[in-house]
Length: 265
Image (cartoon, rainbow, N blue to C red; front, top):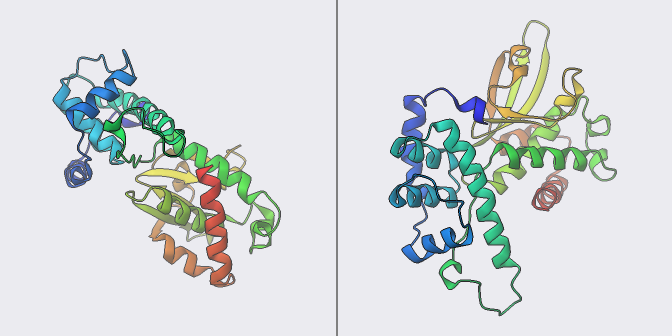
């Protein structure tokens, strides 16, 4: 993401960041001290504790972009560097949470100050690349997935179905994010393609049907395929699923649940 975040945020982005600030999860001084203790040397940047604490609260609330803006606004750290650094912070927080989860039932937490901290980590390029890779494996398997309309030829001719299911699963995984199915087409030739947008990130699980892409495409938007399919519409995940009338509701729910388990693994 570092190279893609170089331009200053627009007024619209800054407005959204301000609105998202309500998602901040308060870190008490003991919790903040514990995080720093768990990562010796990691937080030794020239960042005032008040600003660092605010940024970490936003990361825990699942809003990495707002956290990066807080760091870049209150320190000499450029926005690019803040985004990159906070992606590493997110990994550290995940490790701390996993350490807490690994304690035997009834055992005392490693530190009671973190016992009720619930991380709602937002999407990043790294996490979405992992999601896209898992989705590729999921839709490449046998029954019941390959019995879905068009999915038997995955990734070819399956972009609408795959994107609808993936968007629904990603919305349930990143509950604070804005997720949409992008319906892109070229009117002149009546060509269509679908992918998923997650907070401005492109997740195209079927991009490797095109010769210029060897793997599913994950990048900061806009998609490079937008030049080929310039007419864009956005659908809510549930609306995208409703468009697939050939699949009954029970099977849709089953596939979504299975895909959610795959992404969580």
